[in-house]
Length: 117
Length: 111
Image 1 (cartoon, rainbow over the protein chains, first blue to last red):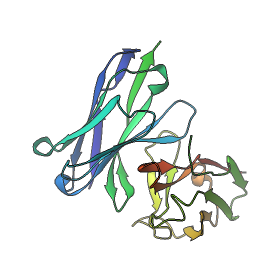
Image 2: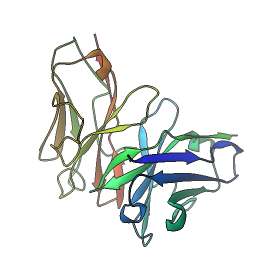
Image 3: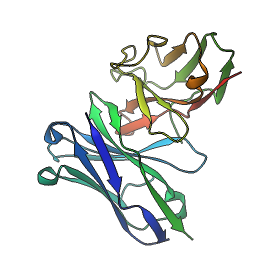
Image 4: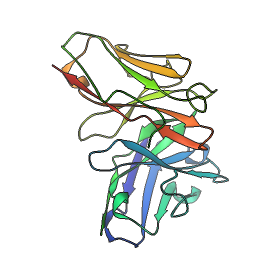
């Protein structure tokens, strides 16, 4: 079955950087687009970033554009989210998710990122 | 700020039917892009509930159903159960934003 495991979360000061990883298994990783979605404390889901199956294109949400970068490594079955210039409002649980037909059909358990002022 | 608007909360007694609306704009829900629904129960990862406006993934009970009309979509839960209590989100793609969007979310409470 599909398994997505996020890692790399933690506590970072405002202005700092952090890289999240998501290791995928149970499906042909190179055939599917991948997303990052976040949920801030007490808030709803917010879409963060998307990368095409072959890594040839990326999309970003307005609040992270220019600060976050999504990438993937086919050999490691891993998708990454490089986060820079972090702000306290980036504090959230970050989920990676597999895409199928413009919808997110499988989700990981999430990685917690806390940005201190 | 989400471009897909949902009611903040809905509630119903066990066995009743509740519906959740998702209202968008011409650049998302009225376009060629489908609407999808997710269930997010406390302490768990979000789960796909409805895809392509009306389709249920394998394993999702037929108590859950989706519909779409114009710039709006709806999720219906019939035979409401205690384990349905949680948050529900719609999602689509927005061509004007060139990105994916989630609805504002709806909390379902079973009385």
